[in-house]
Image (cartoon, rainbow, N blue to C red; front, side):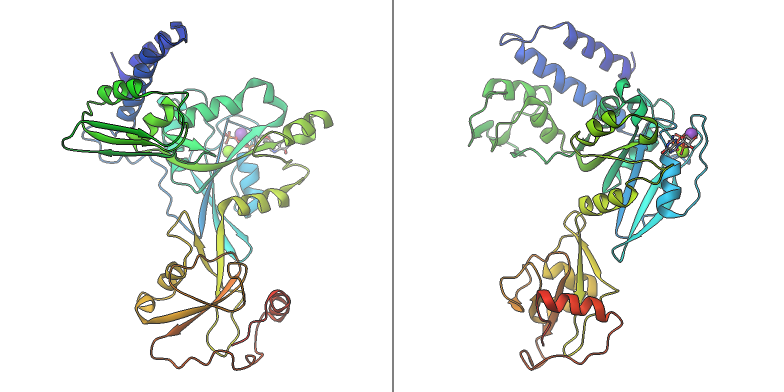
Length: 400
Ligand SMILES: Nc1nc2c(ncn2[C@@H]2O[C@H](COP(=O)(O)OP(=O)(O)OP(=O)(O)O)[C@@H](O)[C@H]2O)c(=O)[nH]1
Ligand SMILES: [K+]
Ligand SMILES: [Mg+2]
């Protein structure tokens, strides 16, 4: 029997099993069994050389966004509108057969947007190009799940979420607060700092047993579920933000539009009428959590057209991360940093390497050998972005 059949069989057994106190241990074990099989499913077949049919597209820009959705919901139309890169759009399904990259220029940052073939139920098990599409979604910083506003009754949102979850993607979730460490000896030590209502010590042991783990340290820091615990044991989950984009609102009534726009993490648009596309861009950019930091050489103004772009998902947002972006020896040479912006209590503030920077902060690195000329009046005004500087100065004067 193949892996997919075995998963189906266990799923059927779970559906048959009544949920109560007496069956909860058995159900927990079955969940662990399915998780293990799904992980096997994700491993490339032995002897496979990576395969030439993947959608490997080189990463570009400050972040990557993937368009995921059923066929003909308007993914390609949206890519063309947002990036200017043409991607074939047509009224028949599976128009797009590969991954088409485009670039969005927004807030002085560049974001790679990827158009992908439509996926359908069963994608996680290899239907259509599902597996390749999902692999691209996994490599992204944000998923835009595009849905057809006129077909919402068909449960596409749930189906696709399930498909992505089946391969270890977790949308709009944070990793469970469970500390888990395998050991060589000593048995299982089980502790909790929160009251648990979904799982108990015995069930934990059974799940670990299913994974043949007999020595480990487990600490629940929140009221987590069996699924959360399995996610932590598997350890290969990817936590990604997702915005649900309801397209084609030009063909549905105002009541539906209103209802859809109130769904969690959702935005309604129409490519045909160019409705709400700017809101979508703003939303997308916010979700990516990019942090633009402007470097200010001593006695000069920062170049507000050329931010260093940091992100907590990619490498972090501290002064140290900023230094590493600018030059690899800068961390070593830094005496302290002067920071202007929303991350500081006063402007400028002397900061160390661990200072967390926020979007639009200005940073001046004072090096060990340099003489600190801090506080010596205003810098000369030669800049290619006078308006933005004036704007910044209103918030916090960029002296020094
Ligand atoms: N009414 C309406 N139709 C739209 C809108 N956006 C796209 N379409 C139409 O929907 C159809 C499918 O668009 P595509 O962009 O090819 O959809 P897709 O999701 O890329 O499709 P596949 O690549 O086949 O998965 C085309 O006929 C588009 O013109 C919209 O906002 N409103
Ligand atoms: K299409
Ligand atoms: Mg397409």
